Each structure stands twice: as structure tokens, then as C-alpha cells.
Length: 175
Image 1 (cartoon, rainbow, N blue to C red):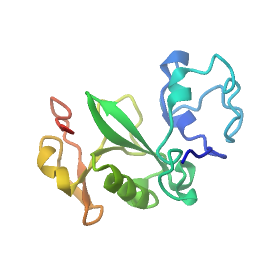
Image 2 (spheres, rainbow, N blue to C red):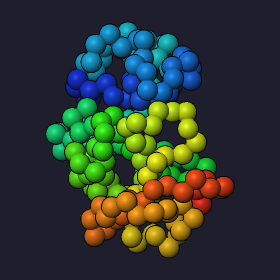
Image 3 (tube, rainbow, N blue to C red):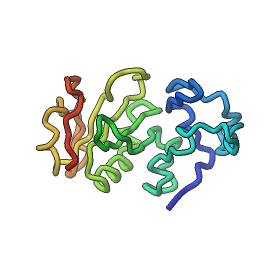
Image 4 (cartoon, helix red, strand yellow):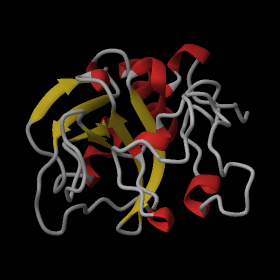
């Protein structure tokens, strides 16, 4: 199920768009209001591929209507990092991954059974890694090099760890 953004424009803030030199955590200059479609180049050939190709997990149909990124303070997406697929969670509100975004994080980790890298609200790019990693218990044995100190049990299915900053940064193999 493909959803429309409505009044959410979180991705226009958190995401970097190299084609138009837009840095992460800065509102895009082409956004005229917080309503979806207010991008002045949205229907234009000038819309960067980064923008036209991006869909957050909520737009892909995960979660309820009330779990839209602007409502829960965290945006989730699936990304490829160092040739592996990971979920990414970027907080736009303090501690959202442990509060308002916890149910959505749990849903996504259960549905995809892959690690989720969490970038905390107070950490603005550029930085090399996320701050936390949520690891489904079923694949913890594959993730020992990326798991740090336990922060919290998400539920009986997954745990949140402080991400270890080590080389190689991530060594999870999905296959």
C-alpha cells in the first residue's frame, strides 16, 4: 500500500540531497510549506532522483495513520550500507525511538528481521555511524561485532544496543 505524505515533510529536512547540494538536517529550499506537494520542483524534471526515489517505511504502508514520521518524531527507511540492507531510524525528537516511535520500530524490526541503525536526535550529520542499533534476537549471533552495550529491551523480540564504532563499521551478513 502506497500512502501520500499529507502534511509530513520530515524527509525534506533529515535527508541529504547531493544533486542540489542540500545537507542533512536542513530544510530543503524548494519546500514552500509543510504540506506534501509544496516542493516547488516536485512535478518538474529538475526533481532530484534522490527525492523521487525515496519512500519512508510509513509511505510503504508500515504502521498506522498515527505513526507518520512527523507525528512520532522518527523517520524509518530501508537503506543499503556497505553492501548490506539495514533499517535506518532518524530521530527528529529526543528519545523518540524509546517512546513515540517504539511501536513502529518494533513493527519494522519484526517484519524485516534485519538490524536497524538509529541516529539520535541530538546527533546531526555528518558522522560515520548511527548511535544505536536495534538487533532482532534471532540474528544476534550474526551481529556480535556491531553490538555494544545494551541500552534497552525493545520487546522480547529485539534489543537496542549502543553502536560500537569499530573498523569495519558493520559486519552483518544478511545471507
